[in-house]
Structures are given as C-alpha cells and as structure tokens.
Length: 173
Image (tube, rainbow, N blue to C red):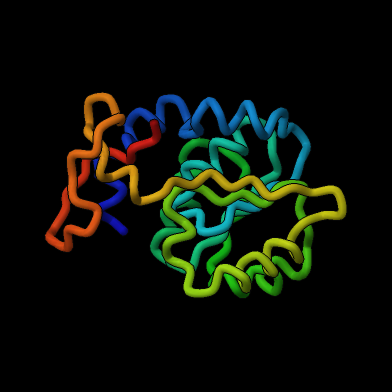
C-alpha cells in the first residue's frame, strides 16, 4: 500500500492541491450529492471517497486494509475534509456500519475483480442501500488492456499473456 501513495498513477500532489479524483461521467451520472449519505466500498486510501465529501456528501469509506484506512484518515485530516473511514472486509460492511443505510453505495475501478463471491457482495450492497438509494458502480473490463495506448481502438496486446506487466495508467477510454 505505501507504494501506491507515491505512484504517479495516483498523483497525490495534484490531489492535495485539488481533491477531486472523480471522472466527469461519474459526477454527471450520480448528480448532486450535497447532503446525501454515501458509502464507498473497497475505498483503498480514500481519494474518491474524499472527492465525494468535497462535493458535499456525508461519506464513509470502507476497506479491509488497516494501512489504507490509516492513510485515508490522515489524508482527510490533512485536507480538512470530514469523512469516516472503517476497516472491515466488504462482506462484513453491514455490521461494520452498524446496520446504517446509505443514499448511495459507490464502488469504483478495480474493485470487482478482487471479489470471490459477487452475489454475496451484491447482497451486502442491497442491505446497505436506503429504501430509495442507489448503487453506482464505475468499473472497467481487463480487455481494455489489450488495446493500443494511442487510440484505444486497435488490439495490440495478447489478452492471455501471463508474463509480467507494468502499467502507468488505468485505461478509461
């Protein structure tokens, strides 16, 4: 986890200057979050969680990694952003928030591929949702990694290549 805090992909210096890591389509699709409660499942070290808080949501970030949650809490304090961060396995989220429900359950890029039981995860999401709440899931498929870096329109890499891979950015074309 500490290597992520210094990775160019996350641009923490830029985030500290302008705490908004969300994609334009996310904010357009979710809409105004002022005054709404939002839980960010598998929040890592909280950049997106804090971005929603900066837009006015009452946020809770949840992740299974104690170092990630400590980093998220430190970042919130450093930036003066009100946010709650909890350490828990995503499948234990309901008990971790003490059966609280949320207007928005949010999960973002690279979260689903780590889940051994997507049906169980969906059941947790359903329990976390307030009666008129919504799930917002922003995700990508690993097939995008086979596309060329220039245009994202030509298959140039082997999808089944099992060799080591280094990537400087997440393709979100």
